[in-house]
Image 1 (cartoon, rainbow, N blue to C red):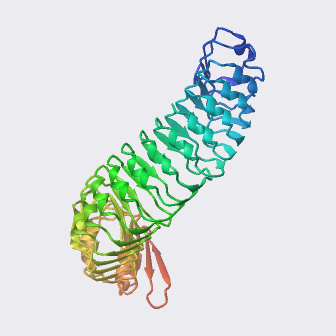
Image 2 (cartoon, rainbow, N blue to C red):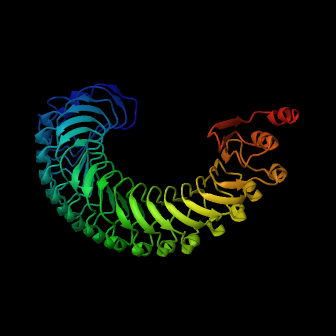
Image 3 (cartoon, rainbow, N blue to C red):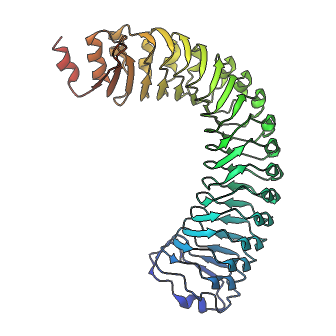
Length: 461
């Protein structure tokens, strides 16, 4: 009886059928409290109770603990409130427990540790408080532990290292603090770790490098310090790493080149120093590389130009130097942000090869020379910021003839480059908005394109 249009209260008579094995009313519009005596008849045959995606409210009755042979209990995505009754620990046959997306509060009951057969525990997006009970380590059959978006306090208990069958650990936005326990290295089956948006501190434990099956590591927006552990390179299967918005320091590991499966790397807003290692160019599956807001120095490594799969590169707000190589502009690249560095030289004409480019930020560097007319081939471009450089616009008539930009392009240039009113008029007719920064007064002139604007303005010249 899933996903019908049933509404109103749950019929209490359902729980009077002693031989019933399955009750599944998922995805209806049922709106009532759960029957307070729902399992008073000791429904020994009931194996599956699925009432998710309804409009149920009130508390979970303690009598539910008398349905002692339940294997799956799903009350997911309702409006249930109050504390989870300790009698839930009597459901020792449970393999799957889904209580997420409700308004449940109070502590996570330690009696939940009696559920030794549990494979999946999903209690995310509630209002649970208090610590994560160390007894959680007794759930040695657990494969999925999903707790994100709660209001927990305290540390991640070291007993969590006993969950050697766990594949997904999701505890983002839970309020946890303290350090990541070294025992996490014992959880060899882990494939996904989500610990972002907490108050975790200390260093990333070296033992994390023992997680050879890990695919996802997300610990951004915490208070982590120290260097990236050298054991990172042992995680040869990892595809996604996000350690942004911490206070990590030191140089990038040369061994990062050994992480051949890596597809996305986010190290935004840390205090990383030194040069970008050449070895990073060996990550031929890398699609996104975000290392902006650090203290990186030196040139772009030549090998980074061999990363043909790279679609997004963000290195803005560092102290990088040298020229911008033309090889960077591949056919696959969609977003490049190198602004707020110390790059010199000219913008390479090879920029015209990147026909899929939607975002290009080169502002606040020391670039000079002419803006190449090949930039007009970038028909997908939506944002272009070349401001605060020493660039000049030449051959504006060629720009007009070969123009391929979309009308919704946001264009930012220096006033010193746009030295002729004719240039303003032509550009205003071709894009939606131009923000022109005055080098002397720091004023901004915003021109918005409208139909017929070019003809009207040209008639005034």
